[in-house]
Image (tube, rainbow, N blue to C red; front, side, top):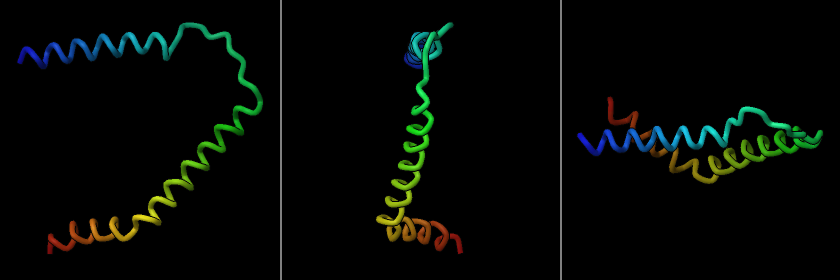
Length: 73
């Protein structure tokens, strides 16, 4: 039980430390107009990459689900 409490305390301390860097109180920053198009490109690339990975591994994915649903009959 003691190890669980220690791990929880360390995790809470780490989360609080990281929150200071991730969510600062004030940020005087400038976002360039190209930032939105870059984010959009990242989103599109992620979706296309995921679809390509699904295409490449479709046989394994289909076999996995076939085994799951065939066993319940």
